Image (cartoon, rainbow, N blue to C red; front, side, top):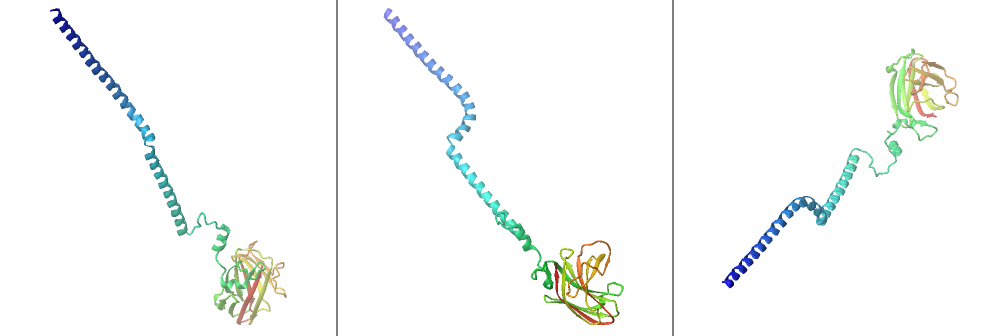
Length: 263
């Protein structure tokens, strides 16, 4: 009886120990899972982002490199596009290194061929002060009379005008538009004329027809700028220079101008 009781007590103790061990195992497993889940929920949101930057640095580096390469290619494409647009618009490229003053000089219109009879600034090859050459006629009252001019040619070697005067006191003229307007310090003329006209041409400097002065040519055909023959209007800056012959009666006359030196 005592042996039997002892057996049962021993078995009870073993079952109790076994049950206690199982409970401990279950308890520790349950307690370990819950903190891990809570911790993982917060840890995933922050640490995976960090791990993506650290553990995934190789992938991110490739992405960044690709982005940098794409940006460089885009910048190069933009630069090429800008250069193409500038070329199509006729603008200088940023790296062309061209001088703006040279561009301005090359873009300036060339003097007209007939302006070769005009020498500017004392240089026979400089015709830049000539904007145009034309011819006109005036009656004895200084009113325009187009019928007086029967022909006019302006060539690099000479400007020639033919006039059909109908009375004395009429003017036949060859004019030069000054570019830009200016008051010359000296004007020398090389010219010939024929027909019923005054012994020597004279010159006018005018501004739009509203103001101007007339000047005689000296024996050496230099304009006497210091002693005007007459003036009209107020002060002015000459826009045109005219070489005129004045009729002494009816008849055909010719005026040829081969050189005007304007300084």
